[in-house]
Image (cartoon, rainbow, N blue to C red; front, side, top):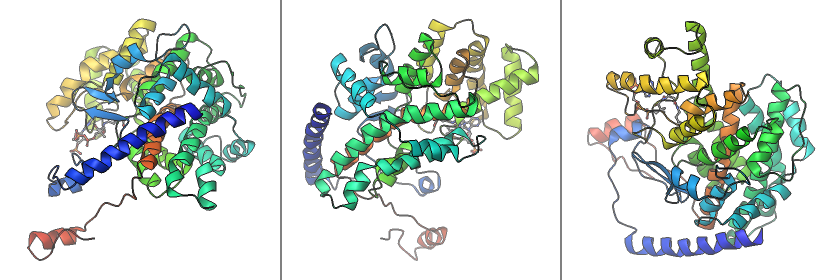
Length: 441
Ligand code: AMX
């Protein structure tokens, strides 16, 4: 672990000194205005966070440390014989800020292999839940049970210097990421495969081994997992899962508690649950229309029906993005390469041709284009993973890479407790009448 930890700390010390300098010389600069409407509308467009690992551009989509998804696909290390990037490389990039060599990525793989043991009480805790529990409920429960292993919590309880917080958070981060695939695969096999569990394969990379423990030995599925785990990892700091992890971590809750909080947010239908909603919506459409491959006209009618029922079209729209999500495009490329004739995948592409103009015509949808969730389910179904309630767990395993790399940075940069100001509508009304100030403590 030493080499990566040392490299991270050396980088973080440089950035900490830069931030100190920036704040000393420019700390009072005004960076924007806040309109009253923004505080009632989910704080959209208010810049209020620092997240070093990735940056979202409304037009170009996500960039991880400056690299776009196609650039990462070309430049990150791959598994032997594979053509997709391995998530270990992306994690290294987010953490250290530099593209890893093959050896660097291999080092991350071996660190995670060594730290992947999950204690029995975690499985026993999951077993205490009804099998019918949603996989995300089981997953977050498993993570909470694993919190007994937190090095940060233990060291904090015995008295740890503030300057060592980052070190304990780093150790927890590596342990937690290493163990998540085992917990997720356990839940999948418990819920859908009669509890027939599969032991880890110590020779495989992190995502390849995850695919193996889920029960999918197809090389195509392993490649899909590498791509999936890479593209879902991070989407700058303000989305619900990243922000919740950061917020809870700012109270010095350990990485297990913080990550679990973030994943409870990911489980919401407007966030990570959308991928299960998408495939459910397509399955229902195929059943209603009684065809495997609906025409664009049939899809258009079905979209109108969905909208008429007061529902959103899942997988379309975004709070920040204003174009087709490059993560959707990366999955579309994967589909074209591995399964161009699959009718479900073709339906996803036909929906892509049909939905944007309809959403555009509503006049209120700011982004009519597909997001990451519009595509992922169809690729998974192709390989036989039809249990769509499980999809958000895959998202959660991937999202650990971004939110936990961020937590390491939060502690290394000594970011303080997050505590924005809130107001009441009563105060707003008084302020509008000139009777009170809107700023308080
Ligand atoms: N279908 C129908 N209506 C939509 C829509 C969609 N896909 N996307 C947005 N709208 C509607 C909103 O409901 C809102 O209507 P209202 O004024 O009557 O309440 C209006 O358009 C304006 O919304 P917006 O500013 O464009 O979007 P937002 O920032 O408020 O919300 C999002 C963004 C993603 C929650 C929204 O587009 C949505 O609900 N999409 C479908 C669910 C989805 O795909 N979520 C996944 C997001 C990605 C992720 O986190 N994994």
